[in-house]
Image 1 (cartoon, protein in one colour):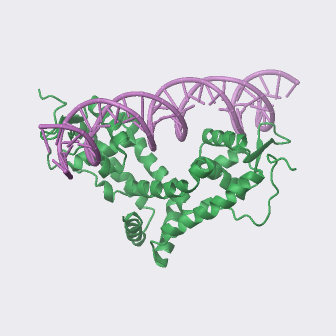
Image 2 (cartoon, each protein chain N blue to C red):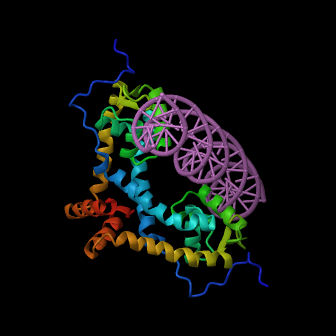
Image 3 (cartoon, rainbow over the protein chains, first blue to last red):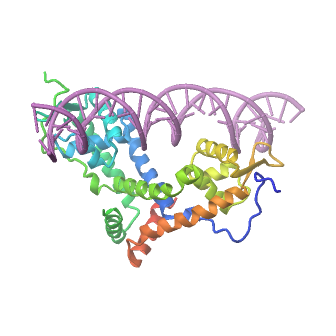
Length: 154
Length: 154
DNA sequence: ACGTTATAGTTACATATGAAACTAATTGCA
DNA sequence: TGCAATTAGTTTCATATGTAACTATAACGT
């Protein structure tokens, strides 16, 4: 009986995936590259993780959200949000109080310090997004928007 | 002096990011959703991580690669590859020997057991990819390919 | 009213990941 | 040659992340 740990002979019957043409793989590479480029702009400067930045971004847009609502808006799970909020509150970047009618819920908002960071980071993030989109012509940009809308729908 | 941990008043001068229209965020959500759907197919069944699967996929296509070459092909860092290989070799899914002329280098290949898993998982992965692409019409699919080619170039 | 169920959020644990230090082997060049 | 610099790969350590269990509060049904 052959040793199962020996290399197997390669037959033509296998149909290996070509990672470089495989959509999920390509999306993963692109997403990581882009997100990392943005994160590089603020991580060391503000000691701010991607998770924390996303929480700050939604709190900049929607005021008085609860942690659960932040989780919905960021598509992060509640544990990740809880931890990000703990750090942000500790760092004085987010203010947390409890909801008057429901003591389980928190009511969250950026502090002055939080806004200062937001107002510095948001334009950098937008600039990085423009850099990526600049690789495409106007027509491609429109298609990309439409395609992402469809793929992300529901 | 105002308490810096108090919520800051919201002025119109802030320009918050709209995450749901922000390309990096949308890419991240899409990539995670798609990759997770595929991983769900094989993770429990084979006790195989995404990292390990990617290593197996390149070994199915390119025979006798070294660990460094696997890292290049998968765009993973060498530590991740080293760990994935340790598990795959231990599980009898990958065969590792040392290169004749350079004792630092490993020469990697799938075992018979590795091929069996590959031949089961690869079609499932392709099926999931087709499910995603089925949300787009033929024209959109072509644009998507072209756009990803451009964004991933260099 | 009161016990069951659901919800908001945190904690604990186990696993994953990344950066840097480390070992071993090879290469380059004075 | 022989010694410094590179390269392949692993180990270590610190941090991140996900699942499940847990606490506290509120809502629901009888």
